[in-house]
Image (tube, rainbow, N blue to C red; front, side, top):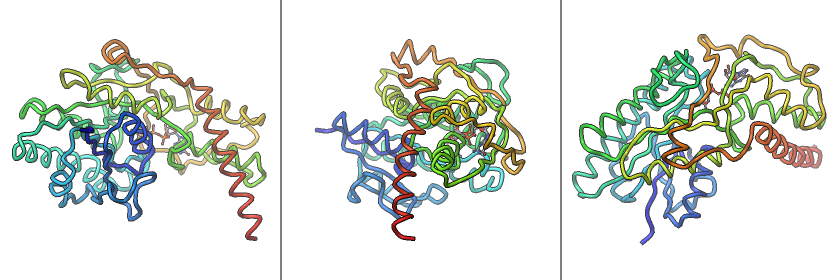
Length: 327
Ligand code: F7E
């Protein structure tokens, strides 16, 4: 019998890569989404609707799906937006995890079946970092409503493991990007603008703090780490990242270089993109994942910028052709 996986937030970037990865391993994949459209690449029969701000049908979905593994990726995941929607973010990104853990605890009790649970924890929890690089033992100092909500979920996951013996794990993932990344995140905002500028559809790109540094990897590599975390003998928490840090400025350089343009001619700073509190520097120490999971990133920083620009060039060219044909 195929193993059954339930992915919350199936419509997001990570949901896309993870469902493909699990299908390649012959899992029966089910997804939860809050959107009114069926999940990308997901047949409607395996798509379930639930908003984690509310969660009243979670028990029903879990009873129907009977999952072996649950990957909890759903969140209000935009850090800047969380300052405007702090309570909503706390509900979805924080209390939403608790709703799911409670539903799983109840399901385990009723069915006598064990479920493996993955919580999408975030490097944003390290916030105003007390040491660099950051490992599983680095204390948290969250700097946004989003990061506070993720810290809440991180500890709830550990509490359910320790209190009820659940196989509940945290993957503390550093920034991971791809052509499927939402356009409000800085890497995709940049690669989309690069393509539009190159094709003469946009003149300027407005950004906030371009001195911020992040540990950026390719999302396709990171979903394998999620799966590996749930295949261990014991439940545990892991930092997942590249171990390299780069500024937004360096990403700009790499992305504009990919189409032979000088970023300085096109980029302007707009304070509306500054955050009330910024996370200046993140850099992972992924030694534990390397040793215990035998996991490491395969795509370099330059390759990541290049592949995202190439994908946006293709997409934007198609949009341009469509736009020209309909105008
Ligand atoms: O910002 C700076 C911004 O929004 C990166 C989420 O997936 O990763 C992500 O969180 C940096 C920040 O990602 C703009 O101030 C400058 O320092 O791409 P981002 P994030 O906040 O690091 C973690 C791991 C998560 O868990 C989150 O869910 O770039 N920046 N100018 C800008 N950022 C944006 N979005 N837009 C700008 O115009």
